[in-house]
Length: 72
Ligand SMILES: [Zn+2]
Image (cartoon, rainbow, N blue to C red; front, side, top):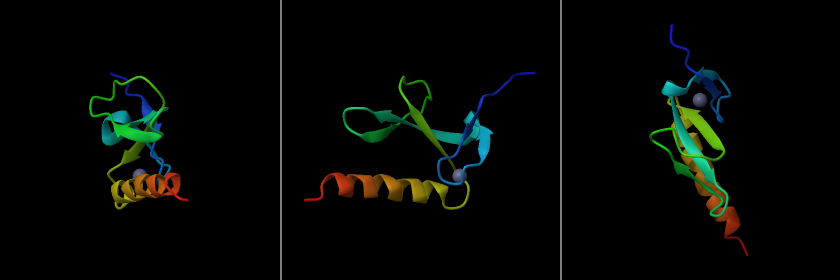
């Protein structure tokens, strides 16, 4: 039996197998997560699932972060 590591969706906080999640890597410099389709990039990863609004909520969170960094 093959073991698949499970990760937590940052939006709904449910644990799922990595294969059911989208991985983003937090780039220290840019301060903004980059999509990691192969799930192999080094660095701190965050995951979101494809359940309900999780994808959209994650995108909104990214957008909010960007806006905050730019505030006066
Ligand atoms: Zn989720």
